[in-house]
Amino acid sequence: MAKLKVEVITGERVVYEADDVDMVIAPGAEGALGILPRHAPLISLLSMGEMRIRKGNDEQSLAVFGGFIEVANNVVRVLADTAERAEEIDLARAEEARQRAQARLQQRTAEIDRARAEAAFRRSLIRLQVARKRRARQGMGSGASGPIEGQG
Image 1 (tube, rainbow, N blue to C red):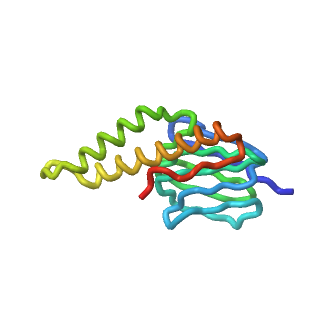
Image 2 (image 1 turned 120 degrees about the vertical axis):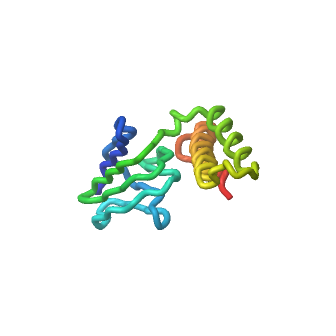
């Protein structure tokens, strides 16, 4: 049975690399991209969001923030502006960032760059979602997936 090779790379490092992957779900610019073995060649922009990588009963989650995804010959290559594995995310720090961004959004002064504040708020929610799902899966066993939190 065919499998995928997956590489997630930023300008600083290789964030994730694995062979024998069954499925990748990535946040494409136009919506979620589900990639299985033998997928048609594809190049797409990435949005910010959760990227999920399924390998057998295991599922890895990464927070990705922009970049490109390329699929060809059962190889999925992600060139991300920024990416973090779930276990690398400091939950307390991410929560502090969410609170700061939310407080900034609630200010109604002229010097607030609303687009930057909204982007920071969304990034913090994605980081929290990815980190919390990993912790929930650890408590329930490796194949389970918890609810999506922090979106809405």
